[in-house]
Length: 161
Image 1 (tube, rainbow, N blue to C red):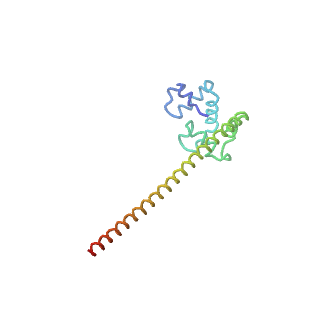
Image 2: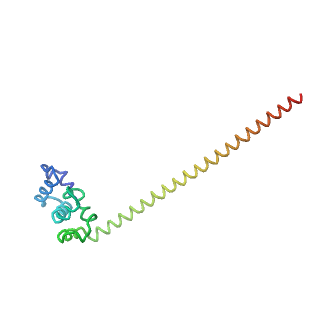
Image 3: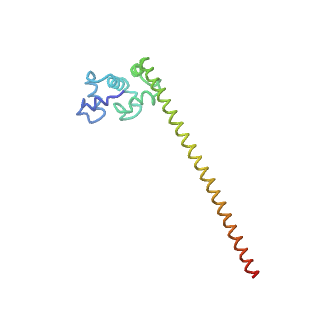
């Protein structure tokens, strides 16, 4: 969740820093969508946990990552942990995500198979080119050998005359 759509729509036009943005969003919480409201709630409830991740994390794009991935759950405040529990998606959304995930997996598998086929095609072409190069080199050697043999025979014929 984030407040990108609210920000893009001009909800907080006078906010020039993340802190000002947070203040503005908190004041206008009832004017935002559900995702933005959750983002505001996380940033408000997890303020002390966000500070552990560093300056400029609160109200920024990394704030959710900070409390969900970069911070151990044991280190979160009780309020923060409660708000993060709201992150748990309803079962219907999880099922939809799983279906999308299956489609994504199928697409990835198809791309992987195409890449593997392309690699095999390249290897096959390289092998054919190498075989053709060896064949051309052998032909060139035979031609050179025949030319030398021909010269020796002419030279021998010249001596006989």
